[in-house]
Length: 125
Picture (spheres, rainbow, N blue to C red):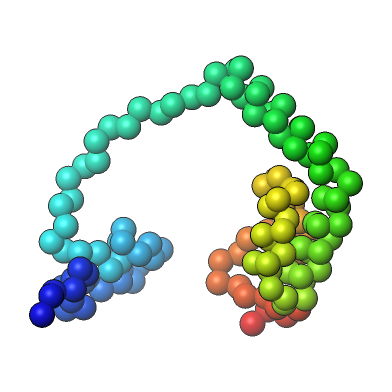
């Protein structure tokens, strides 16, 4: 019989009680894993021309969808506020709206991110 790819539960470390839990970093880690320091990674920076090109493409995208984006964002906000299928509304929104527009719409509905709070219809549960 083949062995499972993951370690057995008895081989996995227990959660650390005094720190914020990060699965695979400080809780539920493989005690047999190699803990060597990662190789140094050099950061890649965009040139000013690349940055401007991306801003131009963003402006063009927003201009092409300027007529339909407000309706799509309104539907996304209504769905998120009403406990509807947010994934479906989000998949429609990403075709017409930028990440910034979508993020702002979610922020308007749900406010600032707060850990461990689940809201549905404006009621924290």
